Amino acid sequence: MEVRVSAPGNVMGRQDVEGIEQDLAKIDRRLNKYKLVTANVRVTPTQGVPGFHVVLELSYGRHHLQAKAEAQEARRAVREAREDVLRQINDRSRRGHSSFVKHL
Image (cartoon, rainbow, N blue to C red; front, side, top):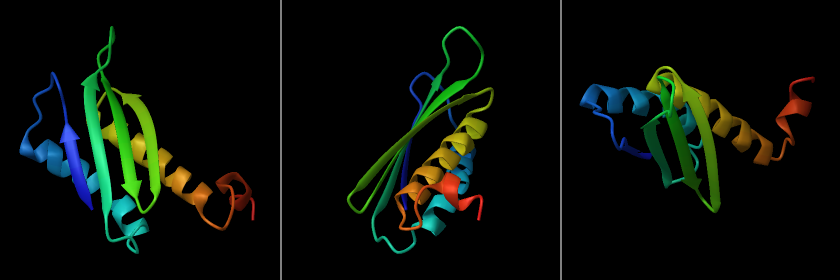
């Protein structure tokens, strides 16, 4: 999986980027049958309150998914966006909507 991280207005070190890549590894394992999976992560500071706003865009096959999250820590927001994308992937699978699958 190819991961691109942009953080306009933020200073993110190599460790931060590697941590985000580790957080997104769960998506890579879920989509292992696709040859090209691209994740674009945009981290920006929230307006008015301390914290971060994250937009995660995922492209694989003919699918394009997007999730947004806000949290006090950037990696926490990335993990929340990741879980939202995983729900979207599950909703698109043949098994149907994830809310129905949970009750089985």
